[in-house]
Length: 118
Image (tube, rainbow, N blue to C red):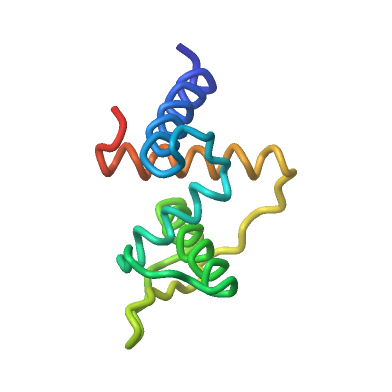
């Protein structure tokens, strides 16, 4: 199986499991999954977030997802429990499709590490 086929298969497994668990079977998109990862990383699961906080959650998720690639490094958790990251290396300029593939790969790796998928 090629790397692309394996990524697609694993991505589909992530989407299916998360969609069943959090969207009553409606298919979650990439942004929704990034948001869920942000909520998971914050660890404040039973609260409502304002619009700007939702963007911050997505930023937390992106930093966490791209940390293993060397783009970000965890720095500290503030008094409100929000994690902060520092930029180690600027992201390369990627086309939209390439960006999507990088994020899907990072998400799949995140859920493999968490043993959410096999």
